[in-house]
Image 1 (cartoon, rainbow, N blue to C red):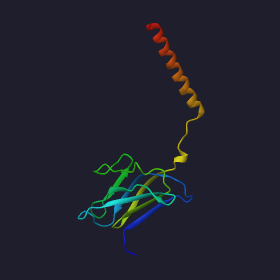
Image 2 (image 1 turned 30 degrees about the vertical axis):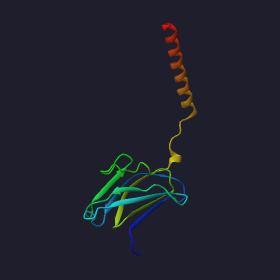
Image 3 (image 1 turned 90 degrees about the vertical axis):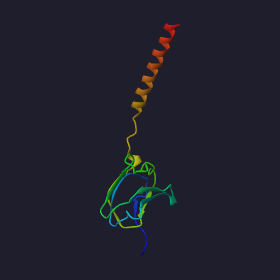
Image 4 (image 1 turned 180 degrees about the vertical axis):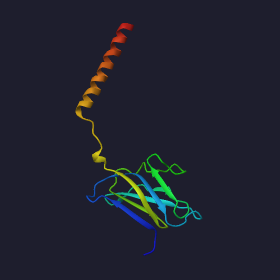
Length: 137
């Protein structure tokens, strides 16, 4: 089979997840032509907006990208959130050397007591402002 090197990342249960960071290594030279690692996120079989990350370099060059670590154009993984599949492709062979994935359903949710304390604090601030306005008048 000819064509670009491809890697597909999916959860076994088909659920959504975020691709927060990735590291990959070139297994061929791309410096003469320039190259981008193309990431196509998918949700329920539909393509999301593609992300292109710089992959121009020599054999064994490594690249690291995350939500905050960008390529020279400012492209990073910040938009790769809430999909069930990520297809990665490059016209030469490459190897993933590290991937950070997050299950958004496992992120901590504030407890009801936290919301109660926040509302109580806002109420106290409101009372203080009202008293200040009354004494100033």
